[in-house]
Length: 355
Image 1 (tube, one colour):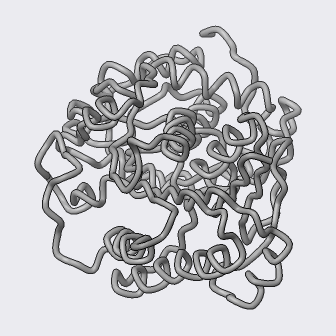
Image 2 (spheres, rainbow, N blue to C red):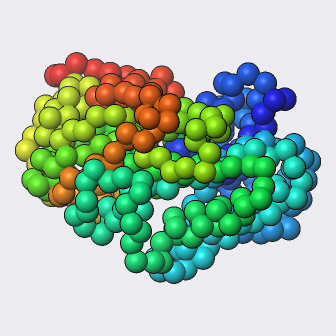
Image 3 (cartoon, rainbow, N blue to C red):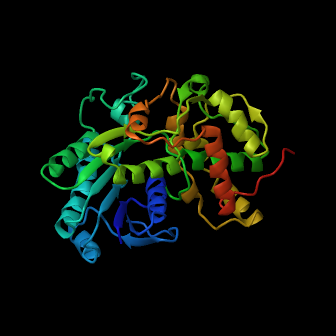
């Protein structure tokens, strides 16, 4: 094989898409690492492993000695920011320790970050955010992971690239940060209950400028970064390429589900969707969907964060374009494509017309 790629966090929305796209590259072997054992697309060999357990990692990866690319999308949530930084940096360090020792063929490491690198989670920030904007006050695990790569790469033959998406959406189960899936399940349940599709955030959030990164676009950027000299040791914002306001996109999403739309009312989904497991189970039976549990298709806390952003959240993607990555998609087209995928996989019911 010309390329042997390891994708850490393969069951996440970003990791799954990246692994699937790498698998489409000729002469490429892909291994997907995750603690959870979930079905993966064809062409990806799953390895169940805990990246915090160095001995287990060595044992599981010792048969792979010719790795050329690492895609790092693994993540562990911790409430304390300092502990979050320590743990997530250890995940990356442990994987590098094992792969570097066994694979002198290593050529590239891709690391996923996000708009938290610019303080998007803290409040209104400078927009459009650019890759050379100054850092925030630590601790921030993005910075620590990035610094680890910078130090480890010195004098080595491999290079790294940091990609910063926003609001990543795509096909994925059991992922706590997947906006598109949350919208789909929210719409399906609302329709089953005879409700219109109401934006669950604030009026200000409904009208603020926002952007999203389709997991498929991020996946293409990942392969581009791994094969392009212009991406070596650089940071790039990656997004669909358009900006939008929910007030204009939300009615289009409602139409994709054959639903009327209603005015926004702040409705914390983590609260109001917490008791909807029985509704979901009934939907699965009624429409003969895949028997996927409610907790595997929903990520309400993350959706609440996104729908509560009352300020513009814009990342500049000029640097990536100048470096040679030009893939883009309109966000409306992204949602239509994602919902089509979910229907094809029988995760949500087939499209229906407005009653």
